[in-house]
Image (cartoon, helix red, strand yellow):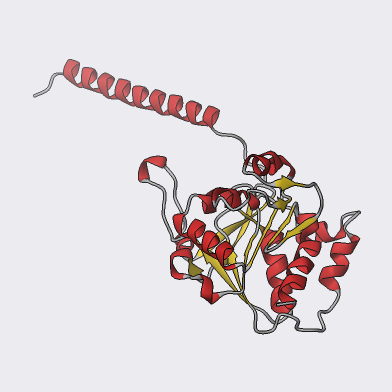
Amino acid sequence: MKTLKHIIMAGLISVSAIFTANAQKDHELDVINKLGTPSHVSVMPVSALLNAPGNEAMRTFFFTPVKNQTLKGKRIAVLAADGFEEIELTGPVWYFRELGATVDIIAPKYNPAPERYGLSSPEMAKTHIMAIQYLQPVGWIKFDRTADQVKVGDYDAVFIPGGAWNPDNLRYDKDVIKFIQDFNKSGKLIAAICHAPVVLASADILKGRKLTGYWNIQVDLKNAGGIVSDVPVVVDANIITSRHPIDVADFSKAVESWLAKK
């Protein structure tokens, strides 16, 4: 039979173990709090963008009914991945469909991060890509096909929206790069807005080409051999580029004009 002394000693050891475990948990929580940052959600509703001072032309563009289906029969591929700028995809896609075009959203083949990265993805990431508004995740959109399933003959044009990390996801995908290179060889239209022209740089098709892009990538486009101008839209043969969400209307109309002539 255990003596009272043994019982007391066992109890003290248990209390000590609990104290040690709690101290470790407190330490881990303290470290986690120092490694993380407070969460503050800042969302830019589309209505706020359209109603912002200086964007009257954009508001008129979206709210004026489309009367003529100038792109009826045209097929457009939209290359996009997680982190695409919302209005830079949804705006042109809405407009091209209103004009009668068939538009497919094409994403890289699903490739989850290695477990050691500590990242988790929702089940819908296998069939959807994530939208952002100036670095803030805001929603998801379903894609139609993956980049390994498409070929140049399927489409009349390829369009790439921007977003701060969407182009990085695209430019690393070998199927995306080959698709763009093949499209360029065909002479068919390649359109890219905001950060997206860096994907064209990775495809090595910018040497000697006139183009534009988001302000902080313009030096990258120059380094890739491009002739860069800081204007809303640049059209050079089969490449159309633009700078920013506020240029979406001009960009969309430039794509329409190019395709309607073919």
